[in-house]
Length: 513
Image: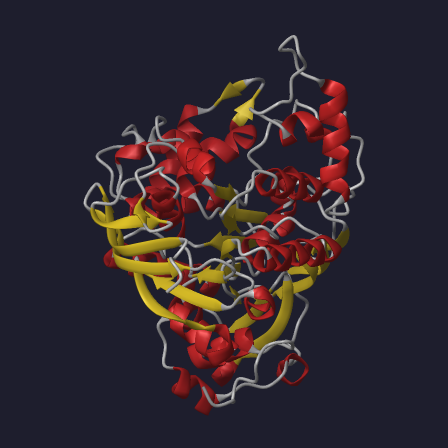
């Protein structure tokens, strides 16, 4: 019997009492491409870090080539033959391409100095094997993100690895580069290298992978051959739904689902394209309407929100509010036009933890509260008092530091910050993530109240139940494109999942499994 390259046996991992993984097992064989899939928080990253020595399991064990893996540091795992390619390029942008390829293992001459001529020559040879034609003396940071990712792949594969872990390796690649990388994966398979392929792109699972493991809420809920499943079953397993119920409901195509919404939209985004993350996404929101964006992790939901708010530049597309658009679209222009946004990660992109509740609420409105360089404290207090009462923010006083509040109240503070700008459209990206059930119900009620007052709302949530309950119309995204639009009675979890699952190139969803 062939020894497994990686054998994860009933591992569990907790952080501050929170279960990240519970009794998870996974085997990875030489010459196998094994997909690891799951939504945010499923435990994929934690499992990778257990395999590569970043963490030690609380229970269970990880074995490598039949022996217990006792890596004290990721570099120990790399030295043993486990290479990891992360979604974020973890190289040195100020160093040359060749310097990054040979980082930590530069060739030297007889005097012990770096042999740059040899390093450049060998770097060109390595990159040519992957179809990459760049000046290896250029600084890495001067190149596009897709090229940087391919160089990171080339570096990882140039170390004679026995196991290669790819964490969302195609997230920044153009279609041509994706094809090239998948050709490299096929080459690794033929060389009997074991590949753990972590991805949210189901097309790639069906195109290149032999087996698939699904994690949900820190548990393994499925492992089996890719050939023995369907896209619909895989989506249902990831989300914890009954595939037979979804199949009975069915769904129609995007063209069949489209219906006209009467009146002029307050927000119109057309043809939003940011390669390779967005491909011609169009969104309309009317006053008093809640429009949901649904899709799996990596489908383009957050990217669409950022594009509308001007956070990310576009290759093509336009955004207008009440028919008007700024020549240069950025967050300042979006706010002036009447768009507000509550971001997905409130801790890193929203609240300023050390500032008070008052300061966090009025942060975006300060330019409007300033006269001759002075900020009116009276006007600040009026706004803060109004929104603390209106949103029922629970704080000991407006001077309490916002980091001391509960997650739900922090989210209300962010809502207050945007609402005090009197927006016409409010983008809410995962507005109830990480907050308790009671606070979640309050936020959902506030969204309904705001829409009833005439505010247009674009609602993004990975919880389908939240989208179904809150939105009158739902756009379904997959791989950066709109693949369906549901409204009225068609807005239900089964229809959304069926629309997500529909795609060419995967097994038919009504096939026997």
